[in-house]
Image (cartoon, rainbow, N blue to C red; front, side):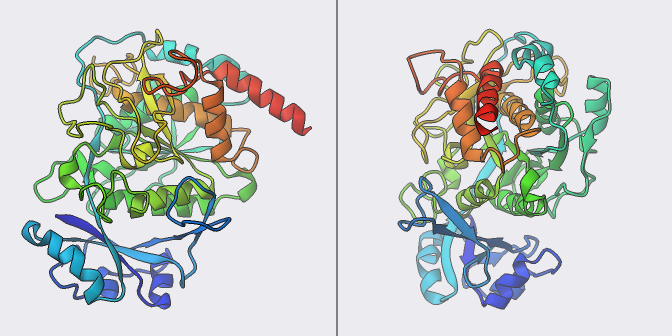
Length: 451
């Protein structure tokens, strides 16, 4: 079983790992862990320490937190493998054998969220642009200019995007990121799921700058080129934290789209185990998500395609399939509707595992768009999430995190959503379908009250 091991080495080693200008190897940090085959190809990652802003439990994600990267507070993550027949023994023994071992956590397989449906497209991306009130948003100056949209997926193909849109698309290769095992150049990956997600984000934010993070092109022994490990997501989010910290605080804007998730408990520790991911706010990746949110990023996750009407064949959680970071209280978990406002049958229903009220809102999917799969529609909550990410990026054009925090923006989208079922929140639609006109009206009121 692959695992993430959280260590607290000497402060000088922690500082070295946290410094992007220094190269620190796994052997420097964790040489000689008994019974663990350490992955020397995975660079150690610094994990900030959560500190409650007002006292209380530092691992509760539903309270104000700040995150400390001080060398005396932060810890370091490495990746390794423990023999399946020794997992229980090794996980319990490691913290006692090595005083610098803080914990051992699951490193589950993560996969893209396409759909199982064979229905033809419902409308086109031009219908989605109309429903997102594109012309009016652009007239208000909300087009995603100077906003970075990180596509954490299988990689982006710029030539395909430019050809489909009939214009140049902006991608910042210098701020993009590749897993160590992935060869290639940002913006030049094969046309696939990540290109679809990038196209769908650009519907609402045509002037946004893309960041390419081909997380799901990493490979594992026995795996395929279209799935990855959660440890790679930890490293990707650590990189994005550096991107965000380098932005001027007064104009900070970073939108992170994640159209992937964990489908099976087979790759996780059992619920209740301290190393569990699906239900555990203390898992390093869930803490990394909270840290990136606190720093000013807007993080969106697909709710998944395990809806009871038409579940994806990989769905193996018997209930509550919105798991781990896809159900994090500090992200927007996005369900899917077609252009007629009808929930698509594969869109996962809540309650979520880390936060019960999931999904948050729904956005549009199952339309003819990117052409990434030929004549097949852009589908699944994989498409709905970047559609919503594009809307968020459009808002960020004139409303950076200094004017509207990620938490305030999440509340705004929930409050303005078009209710489609029972009054208020429900597990099918969340708070409803994103409503750009209502968002514009609310932002106008906010601007007038601040004047």
